[in-house]
Amino acid sequence: MRFQRSRRPRRTLVVLVLLLGTSAVGFGIRKQFITAQRAGTDSYVVPEWEKYASGGFRIGPAHAPVAVIVFSDFSCSFCRTVASDLRYIRAEHHDSVAEIYRNFPLTSHQVGRAAAEASVCASQQGAFAAYHDQLFAHQEDLRMKPWVSFAKAVGVPDLTVFESCLRDSATARMVSDDSMAGAELGVQATPTVLVNELLFVGAPGRAALARAVDEQLKKSRALRTAGER
Figure 1 (cartoon, rainbow, N blue to C red):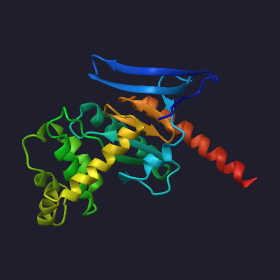
Figure 2: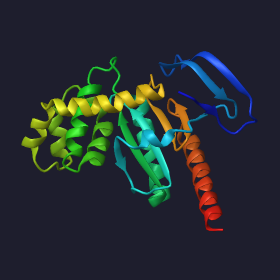
Figure 3: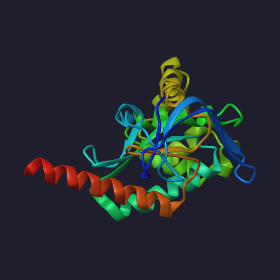
């Protein structure tokens, strides 16, 4: 996968293995044979970002100029932080920003996969956004409560259908499709976030996310203005 560092002069380097990690965060991501173009210190540029926005679950307007694509795990505490930050940013920007949630449950998290499948089942009854918020809000309960209890709490209309969906092999395949998209991008840790073309590994923080969103909105407006001339 090709990445470019954002916002600096064009200096191309080939990195055989890139390992990012901190003991405090407890995750790392490795990329092999990456051609990176240096620019900022916090993000990479992914020119083919739009294909990663074509799957997953959208929270927000269909034609928002900025898509925040999040490869995430419902049992990951840093993913919960990103979800909270995005709720704030979406509220600030209304129709200009949409989140696209892509399930990337880690094998090291006991309930991540099951939570991802439950979110798929909620989505089939139009309740993905509410279920997404419910799982993150009650993350400490994921190992103790049945998935249907979260569905009931957010008003999923047919709980029998929901429970049947949990047993359907097609549900597991939908989660696998998201995970395969993440693997193609090179995701090995959650959260991994794309703000349009800008890639962040780990939870970038609300301020960094807001700056990236503003940058992409300005770019979108500039392109729209140029197209009108």
